[in-house]
Amino acid sequence: MKLIKLSNFKNKHFLALVGNVVISGFSVLTIAVLYRGLTKSDIGTWFFFLTILGLADAIRNGFLTTATVKYYAGTTVERGAEVLGSVWYLAIALTVGMCLINAGFFIAIGWIKNPELIIAIKWFGITFVSSLFYSFTFWILIAEEDYLKILWLRLINSGSMIVIIIILTILKMATLSNLLLVNFLTNCFTSLFALVFGYTKIKSFLKRKKESIKEIANFGKYSLGTNMSSNLLSSINTFVITFMLGPAVLAVYNLPQRLMEIVEIPLRSFVGTGMSAMAIAYNNNNMYHLKFVSKKYAGVLMFAFIPIIIIAFFTADIAVGLLGGGKYAGTEAANIFRMLMFCSILYPIDRFNGVTLDILQQQKVNFYKVLVMIAANLPIAFIGIFLFKNIWGVAIATPATLLAGLLFGYYHLRKHMEYSFKEIIITGYVESLEIIRKTLAKLKK
Picture (spheres, rainbow, N blue to C red):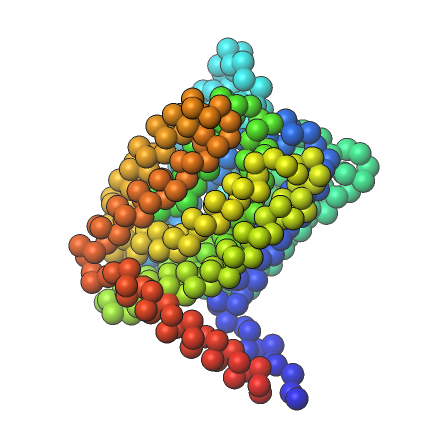
């Protein structure tokens, strides 16, 4: 029997998946180490900081990632330099703006009593700046579909962080302050690596044009809705839990959130490759292929998630114990994980609805979708905490928020192209069988 050639796996889907598996694997390993080395309060504070940082990243990435792919993918060299220069201008402006907001909070830090918020204010600015070059490089590489370089950058960033954290844990130096410092330094190192090797294309900044800046800004101000929607639920609930129930409860709530990487890994991979494919189809006025990619990716992922959900349902307690350790056994984490996994069957449709709307230049709809999700989440979360007095008061808001965003996006997408849940399911089923057939055929060879 001949060995399967490595070249069979050198395609964008495989490399994107491997890249997400690598970063998520390192993330899970890091969390497993930290959950055993830090107190519940410190873990909760760390996740609170990551939530604020992630929300800011969602704004910057949401504003510019899709715009970079849309206007840069498949274009000419001259136009590409103009686009990247304009994106660089907006990225720097957004980063400076966020830092100025943080500076305002820093000035008023003497009047702030919440210790978690004080730590976030002190570390936000420098950490957000440290990831600028690193983030920009990813936008370019996604548009160029160069997932091998993305994989290497992820190995450098996440790999260096987990190595340092393990060393600190062995030396009994794994504290919250050291963790924040390591996060900052690894971002700096990765950004420097990308800059030195020319991946950032920083020289294109000189090619920026006012017209392109305005065009990208008009697109981006609404396209951030897609990225925000995926971060919205956990961010809002993190704030509610931190301020109303405390960081120790947040540590329990975040365990199932981190376990959700089991579906987020393939979802992020398919969204990245699907977005670039849809952008190229749209720029070539091939609406049939754009619709097919959207249905195919959402449908295939739905069917792929079914066995994962079933396994996760029966092994939730084991998963929580492996990731968090014995002190989290018997908490609400396992049942919350089961509920989130049950909801994840709808994640692919919701995510690809948003991406497709962005590609069709309906970014405003995604922005309104975020507002609808906020309107659904906040009152349910507050009422739930008032009634239950525990973490379930927040968790029950998840299904309602997801459903509200999904139906709103689906309703508006159907205004712009023929699209239905039935088509997604049929296309997903047919394409899933085809993938299985091709995989078996390669194995037989």
